[in-house]
Structure formats: C-alpha cells, structure tokens
Length: 434
Length: 178
Image 1 (tube, rainbow over the protein chains, first blue to last red):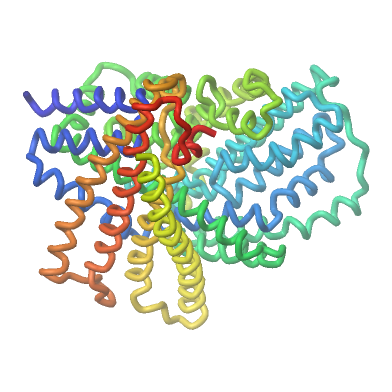
Image 2: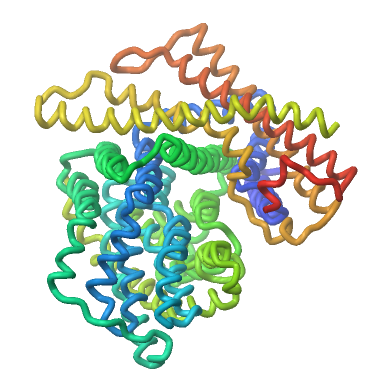
C-alpha cells in the first residue's frame, strides 16, 4: 500500500476512534504509532514515539502554559472575579442591560488574567447570574451572557490556545499573544452592542438599575488595580521586548499570587489550585504528545505535502478555500472540543494555509475565534454545558437560546478578521525586529 | 476482583497525588525563577547562568508528573456524543476499548522512553549551558509514564469487571459518572 493511502486510512481511523469516545490524546498517538509501525516497524515506531514526551516537555517556550493556567486559578482565590464584577456593575449598571454589560466587562477583565473559557463561564454563572435574576433579568439572556463572556478568555491575552497554536506551528508566541488583543476587544465591543440592541428591542428582558455617583464609581478602581497591573506586565513586557512570554507570565503569576495571599489564600486552597493547574497542564501536554506522534506519522506518509500541492494547484481563489476552511471549522466546532479540533486539524490544514500565502499569526487568531464560536454552538457548545452544569435548573435549550443573538455578532467578528487582516496584524507587525 | 482493583487504586493514589503536588510546586519554582531572571537581568545586568536550562528541566517535571493524576480524574478531553449515550455493557465495552488503546499507547511510550533513558545514561549528554545530565529529566518522564500505565491498567481492570457486571457500582468510575 502506498504511504499516502496509509495516511488517509490513518485519518479515517483517527476520526472513528474519536467518535467512539477514545480521548483525543490517545486516539492521535494510537493512530500515529500504528501508522509508524506499518511504515517503519515496531522498534522504530516505539523509539520515535517514546522520545516525544521528553522533547515536547523540555521546552522553554512551553513553560508559559502552566504559568498562564496557574494565573487563572490563583485569580479566583485573589477575589479578582468579584472585584471586576462589582466595579463593572457600578460603572455601567445604569445603562440598558447594565448588569449584562457589567458581566461581559467583568468576563473581559477576568479574561485578561486567565486563558480558560470554561473557568470564566463557571465563575460568572455563580457570581453574576443570581444578581441578574434578582434584578428581574431574563434567565435566557443572563445564561447567554455568561456563556458568551467566557469565550473572551480564549482570545484576550493570556490565551492558552494561542500559545498551543504557536507551539504546534512554530509561530512567534509573543506576536500571537499581542495579536489576540485587538480581535478580543472587537469581540467585547460587538457583544456589548448585541446586549444593548437586544435590550432596546425587549426592555422587559433587563430592567434598569439605579444610578451610582461618580465618587462611588471611583471607589471601585483600587480593587481592580491588580488586573491593570497584570495586563500591563503581560502586554507591556512582551510588546516592548522587556521580557520573554515566560518571564512576563512568571511576573504576572507572582503578582496574582501575592494578591491571593493578601486575600487569605490557605495552604489547602493553594494545593487545590496547583492540582487543578497540573491537571489541566498534563491534559494539554498529553494531547500535544499524541498529536506530535500523529504528525510524525503523517510526515512519513507525505500526505500533508501532497494535500497542500493539490489545494494550492487548484484553479480557485485563496479566499474561497479560506471560506471553506472557516466553514469546516464551524462544523467541526459543533461536535469537537476546541483544543482537540485545533491540534488534530493543524497538521493537515496549516501547510495549506502557508501554501496559500496566509500569515500564520493572523490564521491563529482566526482559528481561536472559530474555536470560541464552537464553544457556543449545539450540540457540543462546551460553555453552554458549563452554565447548565453549574445551574441545572436552567435547561440547556434555554442557554443555547440565550447565546443565539451573540452568534449573529460572531458572524460580524469573523467577517472583520477575514476582511481586515491588517487591523489584526497592526500590533504584531509593530513588534518586528524586537 | 473488585477488592483487588480497589486495593491497587488505594496504593497508587498517594503516589499520583504526591507527584502532581510536586509538579505544582515546580510551577511555583518557575514563577520565582522567572521573576529572579527579570530582576537579575534588568536591575543587576547579570542574567542567571543556565536559567534557560533550568526552566527546560523544570518543565519536564511540570508537564509529566501530573499525567497519572489527570488520568485518575478522567481529565483527558474526549468526544462523548456516542459513549455518553451508551448504557450498561455497551458503555463499559466502549470504556474498555478506550482504556485498552490508552494502555497500548502508554506502554509504547514507556518502552521508547526507557530506551531513550538507557541511551542517555550510557552515552551521557547534558544541557548546553550548565551541563545538567539529560538522564534525570528523561528518567522523570519514564517514571511518570510508568505510573500512568499502572493507573490505566487499574481502570481497564475495573472496566472489564463492569463489562461482566454492568449494574455493579464503581468507585473508580464514579468521577466519570457524576
């Protein structure tokens, strides 16, 4: 059998294994190992696969991941979530849909110290939903807001997904992190517009809150100073070249750690936070190893090169192919976990992207945005499941319904990323030479 | 069989948990190292010698020492559209299939990593800046993979027990079921 056919069979086997419920990491590694055995024999396959866990762990760039994950967990102990929500509520609570807007702004604030979407959705479901309900907000709107707000963490730096993407495709992690900022802020702005429009059409969904004085507003600022400090360290440190992403993550973790200690972080709290950090880190690394074995196998088959030549040689405009890739990810996002989807598809899709002449950093941003959308769409919209998991009294169908108006906003955001790549690449391009 | 599986589970749990806590402690070490590096370079103009090597070797512990703990908590991402709808014997057969595949993968990883460890031990080899022997990091990986293999073996035994007795309760799978 020729290697390219083996490659296609490998992809089919991988899809089958994932569908029947084999964890993504093991499915990818199993397919890769079996493929390598069929091409090079068992000894070579075992040696090639066995070296990967070490080489893909002893990696300086990868050290940014556990630190970013730790920031997210420590931020919860540091009281950042409640502080941002209180501050946002005081500043914008009076506006139409003010509490929903405040929840979205607080989610963005939490996103700037955390890269975990599901954690953000879970936290704000517990924190903001009871307040919205007590003020007469529609449960559907409130559930939609917390589910959508969580996705901001995937794009606004520090983004674990962008770091993993950078590692897989060997793109600049510093540029990727900076590139996530503008589309993250655009997403936030679009979500706020969606809330305002929905509430203006249906004012009964979100009664207005009482006004607060300017003095009251100012009084909330010290409690969120830690967020500004972390954002400054991560973005400023990387953008101006003062620190590597790892160093900026270390300093930001230290800031949040000190804040958590001031908020009476206990030893058991620290232990639990570290265990959760390690659990997430181990999960990510095992997927990386599994996918890397699969990538080795695919490289031996020559399939990615063959596929790239085929697509690039087609008499079709690159934007049409890009549109096809976007649609593919939107469909996959409905049924696959975002991280798994990204890691499994990149070995095949990324050479095509390069062949078509697209910028890897820009594509990383687009891909993470598409993953965010996948976290909201049925049947496997992970953030919606998280909201339903924390609040079982709100049916999943209601959460998906609450998310629907925001999906229209997502179409606008994806269109902006596709049509204005220069806008997305403005900040990273300024970093050239640093 | 149930009591044997539970005994093995009880024996392995402290090892997994301690390894994971150790990995967590190394995250804090990375945090301190990063801060010291920034201060040493920008204030004292003397970067830490071998800082790069140290981060890389600590990362081995951070990335690998928690893998068995993660598996014990069923922390790996998977698609549940099919397995989530399966009940009784069909469910445990699918779990057994997934764990059998996981066991094969990790056994191959252990074999390959052990061969890598033997080479590093016999031929030497160290990090470029401060010469940390590579066998230490590779040994940590091999140990972590071996503990993971034991965890998967316990879960596989439990899944096979449940294939035979689909309605029996299971402490080991309680995390997955709830």
